[in-house]
Length: 492
Image (cartoon, rainbow, N blue to C red; front, side, top):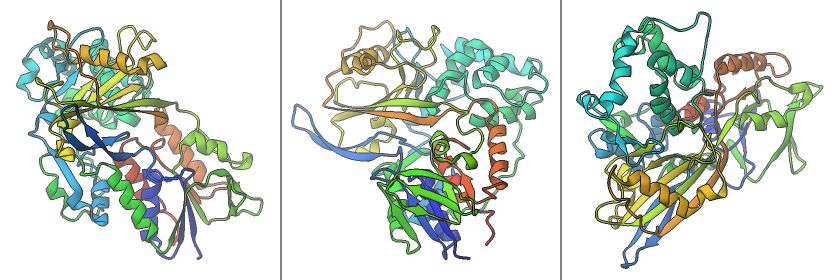
């Protein structure tokens, strides 16, 4: 058959889809449609030239989107192998200070608290009182999952098993770092399925379940070459020129594929199924495309607004999304250093809740320490990235540079010490990412199954696949994996 597949959206999910589809169906025409002038979505890496007051200069990498990958995502390792990116990899070993040292900053206090990285460190203050009692009590707590429930929020789950203080202090901080969301809204089964599975495996106890082997057999069909050998004893990794290396290589490979066409600066006005049963994609420039198959890697609410009334789909607007402000900061080097050695810190939900009175910072990454190899000529500079927003209400006063520096001073000054004064940064850039991270709420997995069933029958009859961060996961690995799996069930 003369297969013509249209992929909607040029972010990582869309790029992965077009790449894998072009390999799976080399006889098909693959058309990738992106409304903006660039491909890559929220991934954005660039280098900037900086100079300090002493005349030192450096070429420093700045990320405004995702900045690290974990080696357990085999779908990404496969892309690295297939795209020939092995020599661009830089790794952070498990023995590094960036891996060993991660911190919490408790709202309304000064300084950072080191999270435990060994069994013995759990017994050291302040974790001995903040963390240990909750963990030790959990295995002896009776099974308490309410009968019949199939999902709940992360906060509800952790409160049920570990108590409300643990849930707010550690659970909400974890959610801030991954989803920039309120843990009271986020589905535990969609966001952290391993926790739900541990509770089942441990006869009601998460701790017992964590100690028992996971007998689930993952599907293994990845062409990863020798890349896994590079990932032994690696905590996180990236590329010399940032995560944009991955999306850039995908875009370049697709541009050189004879069966792929890329349409940038091409908004979509609508899509659906015509009366004669043909699929229709209407472009804003007036063109109409009649593909045999469509892959939507668009945000679900965006897709919902494009569908014709006769081709509507359920649950596309069921979940909210988080908006995040990313502030890149580069400072001249100081002695002592501005921050302790480590990856960075997260901030839990304030006890007073998310109000305008709170600073709105979710966490800060110590980029110079976390991925120092990206800036080999930058020993005279300190690079940090501050994440704000999410469930926190943000006003212009929250993102004012002086206000942010004041808060960072509180965070980076040891308790009971004189408040340090941060130097003026020599480079700043603020990025406002609106609705960039979907928040799957309880019941999300069931809703996505219903969506899948609807797509398989009726007017769509399996000719449309809906993928992306709003469907199965927000990590880069999830996005690449969804693109790899698309079109597997289409009849050849």
